[in-house]
Amino acid sequence: MEITTWYLEQTDAALIKKGGEPTVPVDVVRAEIPSPELSRFLYTAVGGDWTWTDRLPWTWQQWQDHLDRPGVETWVAYVRGTPAGYIELDGSQPGAVEVTYFGLLPQFAGKRIGGFLLTTALEKAWSLRTRWPDLAPVERVWLHTCSLDGPTALANYQARGLTIYRTETEPAPTTLPTDPPGPWPGAHRPR
Image (cartoon, rainbow, N blue to C red; front, top):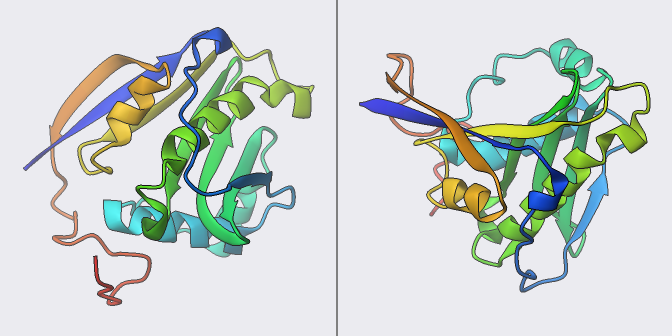
């Protein structure tokens, strides 16, 4: 099995193409207090079905150290008080903001939240310096996705105005689980 990774970027905020309105009311709120517990919950709840495993071995302190860095932000989408998805931004690289993680909890897919949340992610990335004035001006917003990610991820990124600047194809690691771990291993929730 091979995994294809696409690297996408946007070099001007004017290139953002807004997504449609969600079918349910959505509030997107910044988690202003870095919280390893919240971030790990969102990471596993959103990424468990897509084999996000790189941060699973992180300790509480590793999460805290990452979240404490200037320019790292977590934004949570809520539907009627329930977390529906999230955005993690990392503006610690001079001139660039990476959308490090982005996605929805499974029960909120198909409600047009993804395009709306990605538009919000890009707007927040481009305006990061207003919240972190000591950082360099944002010249580029970027992210990557791969063939293990959700089936609409790449199309959503391109529809919001991001363009592919690099593609890599590599053999899948031998440590890749045969089934995605889900939000918690062994849960076997219905799909």
